[in-house]
Amino acid sequence: MLISYLPILVYLIISIGLAVLIVALSEALGKKTHTAVKDLPYECGMVPISDARHRYAVKFYVITMFFLVFDIEAIFLYPWGVIFKPLGLFGLIEMGVFILILMVGLAYVWGKGALEWE
Amino acid sequence: MVVPLIYYIALSSALFAIGVIGVLIRRNAIIIFMCIEMMLNAVNLSLVGFADHYQAIDGQMFVFFVMTVAAAEVAVGLALIVAIFRNKATVNVDELNLMKW
Amino acid sequence: MQVLFLILAAVALISGVLVVIQVNPVRSALYLILNFFTVAGIYLLAHAEFIAAIQVIVYAGAIMVLFLFVIMLLNLRQPEEGGEKQHLAQKISGAALAGVTALLVIYTCTRINLGPAKEMVPGFGSTEAVARSLFTDYLLPFEVTSVLLLVALIGAVILARARLD
Image (cartoon, rainbow over all chains, first blue to last red):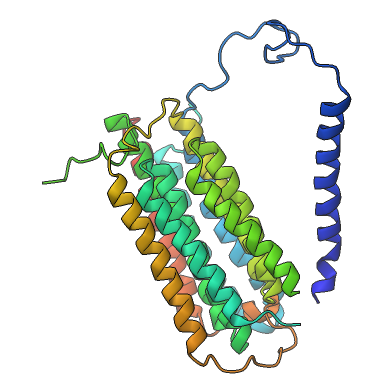
């Protein structure tokens, strides 16, 4: 059973190894010269206008929070889908109630205008 | 080759202790919150270990619901931190002493 | 399998300590993601396949994204750990207490008889096994969860947008 996860382990080892190899090789072989202009952050050839660490708008937080809540809803849908057939109508009603209650939440945030970007 | 139950308990206790230490020594509310998540994870780990040991699926169900509650808790908790930051411009828990007598 | 467990446990403990000692919250969050991934690996060893997948999707995928967004949102650039030296005695005693408690728990568990490990049930921990339990024995908690999520949704919207309305 656990053997079916072997590809993930191999993939993980290869990707970590490759990343370490590339960084180490470029660190070991590359020629290092530092000038003031060269150490600037790379912005497609433009001179950087300001720092990258400015404060983000709270809108992003609200959207991510919606993602989190509806992600949980999706998590409950996976096991439901697996045994949908044996559960029959009973399962449909169960999940219907669950989704209906979350729909109230969706309607609330929609009505509140939290989904609007501006 | 099965992993003994005591290994799970030991790792779970150690992770929980690290989380407690983080809550006690850090003053940044966000890092304290992350340490609380780590403590929840430590408890989940021991539940999964026990579920495996006794082959009872209920342990895994508890973990499932703990994760759901953790997600809801994070959504509200981080909203609280954002709201506090707007009012006091800090997330240092030492400076949040409004309700201290 | 024990070797795998020990490797994962070592990575989990090291990353857990790094979460606590990093000054920069972004680094703490990244180490916490590593911690969650190793815990997911340990879930796989404990035949909790579905829980391991959920761990990656919910914790590493959604919760930590929310944490990183809030860190970027608040953008704490000043070293906010001003009172680091302030309560040194409190901190040391607190940390010692946490460590001693953990050691006591482990010691107690080595002394009591936990019973023999049961034979592995075929399909234990698979999505189907979890689903069977979830939609029959745990029907009420499942439905109540939706109310909890609804409350979290409304609460977070009200708290986050308090100033905008």
